[in-house]
Amino acid sequence: MFGAATGTHGRSSSSMKVAVSQDMCIASGHCTVHAPGVFDQGDDDGLVLLLDASPAAEHSDAVRTAARFCPAQAIQIEE
Image (cartoon, rainbow, N blue to C red; front, side, top):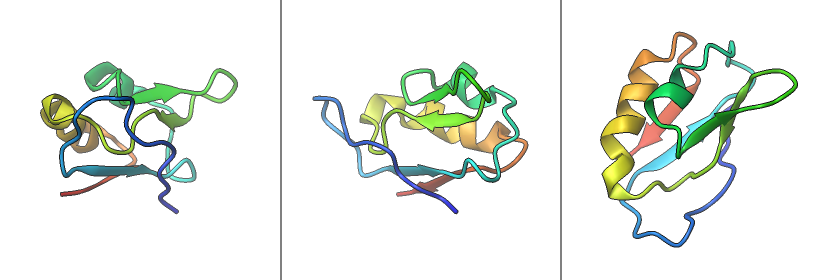
C-alpha cells in the first residue's frame, strides 16, 4: 500500500505528489541517492522513508529518477 508521510517544508511546491510503499521496498537505497531531500532510509530496516510528499519543483526530476530506478517500484508519483 502506498502512503504519504509529510507535507512541504516551507518551500514552494510543485503539483507533484509522492507516495511510497514500505511493503514493496527492498531497501536498495536508490531513492536516497537520487533524491536525498525527499527520501531517507530507516535506521533499523533500511526501508524507504518519505520526507516530503509534495516536493518543491526543483526536486521533480530527481524524484522521477528515483522512481524510475527503484528496483521494487515502491515509489508512486502523481502529477
